Image (cartoon, rainbow, N blue to C red; front, side, top):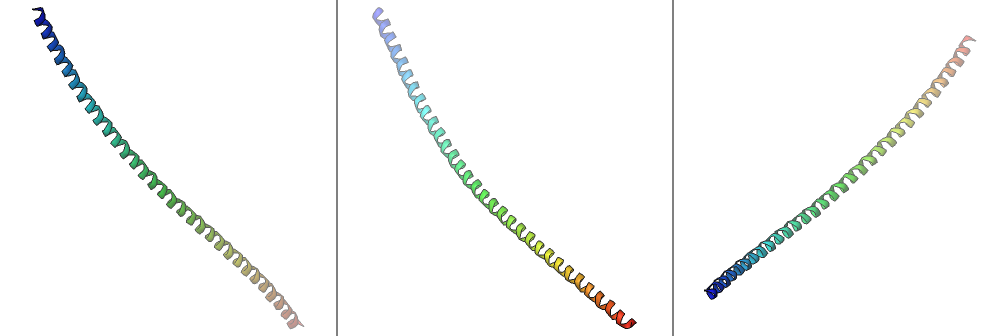
Length: 115
């Protein structure tokens, strides 16, 4: 009977060992599948990050160019305005001198008429 129990126990241990080995194999396969899925997601995230980085860099370059063009246009407008102001100031000065010359001529002519 003892030998029968020993054989039976040996059979049970053998079955347990086989079940544990199967479980180990299944868990190892699941672990590998999870690792592959994780690595795949990591690659996807890295690709998305790189794409976003390129996109943002491109948008930044476009914005910088737009700012530069805007500043250039602003400077051109300011310079144009200053040129116009200087021109108007010169024309005003010319008109004031012309008015004074005409007034002087008019006073001189009145003086001649009075004589």
